[in-house]
Length: 344
Image (tube, rainbow, N blue to C red; front, side, top):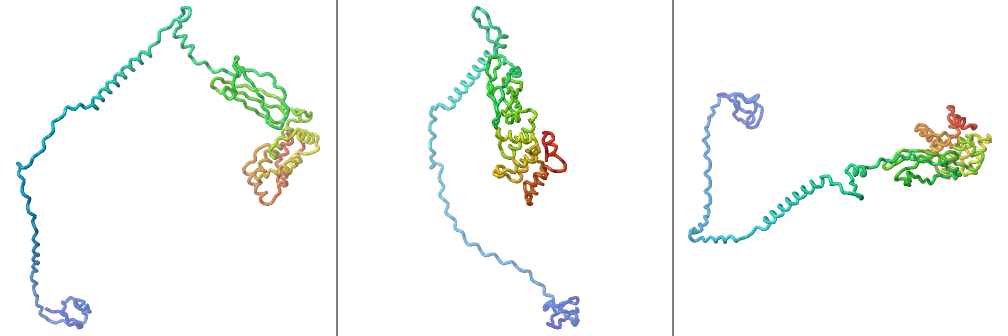
């Protein structure tokens, strides 16, 4: 059999081997020789004999006990015991059944119509009469109530309320329980409205009345100057947070009516006063008060943001409100023309 002889370690390798099985050298230049290789059959390995187990000590068995040596205790005789809990439970159960039965019988008797009882003079009250007496009466309509003329009230600069006392069919009604009162325009010189409405429990319906608020000044109390009075009062409330005094109201209304001051001049006089400045209004609050007082409406969100940014950028409040009042859209001019005063 031909084999390859490794040139490095002279180890005999098979004819087809590429690397030496001993030194792992390449067998490309190895010499092929006929070499007899003795095949030694390996003897089967015999498994090692297991080591002998150590001897275990066996405990001596206990001596068996004879059956005759076991003495069992005698079971005591069963005493004559009465199980009281069971007896009590039975008694309670029968009592409950009796109560239920009694309740059913008595409730059935209560549902039966009562026999008519004789009244005085031998008359008998029928069941129909009893039902009519117990039927709930319908709610009364307070719109049937009438109120006479209310005397003129003097202007105070504060909200004016009237101590009303309503009576229906001889019964005095209670405010808040039987009816509610709502006022409108009850602070400025002019006509105040009062609305009455039933609460709906015992009284329903509604009605209204009115009364006049006067100042005692002929210019202020003149109905022709009503819108001018409202304009001055509104500016005072929004910019100063209070109603004008009678003297202030008379002076400012008189100058506006006589043309001594324009609408824009009156706005500047109140909005740029030391009293308004002392309130410490923020820029947003000042703009909102100006819109409500001078234009008679709340400030829109877009206008509020825009005008606030102008004040934040350094524009004075005077320039801002004068620019709004003289705007090309003429909103302030339209307000003054409706009142009947000069705008600018």
